Length: 294
Image (cartoon, rainbow, N blue to C red):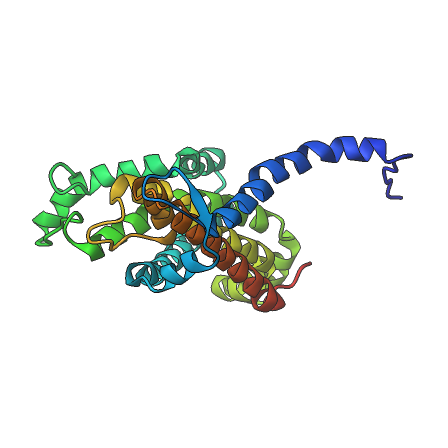
C-alpha cells in the first residue's frame, strides 16, 4: 500500500516552500516586473533622469529594420541549434545503450562537454576555426575553401551554431539515455522474436516511447538557443560580421550595455520573454497532443 506524507498543519509546508518561492520572486518575478516598468520609460541623453513614454519604445523597436532582421536570424539560429543538438544526442544515446564493455567510460566522456560553460565552448571553437591559427581552418583552406568567419556572415553563423549545439548535445544525450533505459526490455525482445528489424523496432516502439523525453528536450533546447547562447555569440563573433549573428538576446545586451539605451533594451527583453512564452505555449498546445505518457 502506498504511504503518503500528511502534514498536520500549514507551518511545515510553508517553511519547506518558502526558500524556493523566495528565489522565484527575487530572481524572476521582480526582475521581470522591473523590465516591464523600464520598457515604459525613456531616459535623457546623459542618463540622469527618466520619464514615462508608454509604448514608444516598442513602436521604435518594430520600426527598426535591424531589430526585425534579428527575428529571422534568431529563428534560423534556434532551429539549427535544436536540430543539431537533439539528433546527435539521440544517436549517441542509442549507441551508448548498446555498449556492454566500457560503458561507464564511454558515457562519462560523452557527458564531459556539458560541464563546459557556453562562453568557454565558444572560445574553443573559435580557436579551432580561427583564420590565422585555427587547425580546422587551415585544413579547410587546404581543401580549397576560403574560410574566414570574421568576414563571411554565413561562415560566422555556421560556427556559432556548431559551438552552441555541441555544448547541448551532452545534456540531450543524458536524458535520451535515461529514457532508453526506462523502456522495458521485454518489449524489445518480443518485437525481435516477432521478426522486427532493429530499424523497425526503433521507429515503431522505441522512438514513440521516447516522445515525452523528446518533447521536454525540444522545449529546453528552444529556450537554451534563445537565452543561454549569449556567451557563444559574445565570445566568437560579437554579433558580426555586419550583424549576421546578432540574435535577439545579444541585441538586448548590446543596446542596453554598449548603447546605454535602457528603455529600448528593456522593451526588447520583454518582447523576447513574450516570444519564448508564446513558443512554449504553442508547443504544449499542439505538439504535446502527439505525446503519449506511459
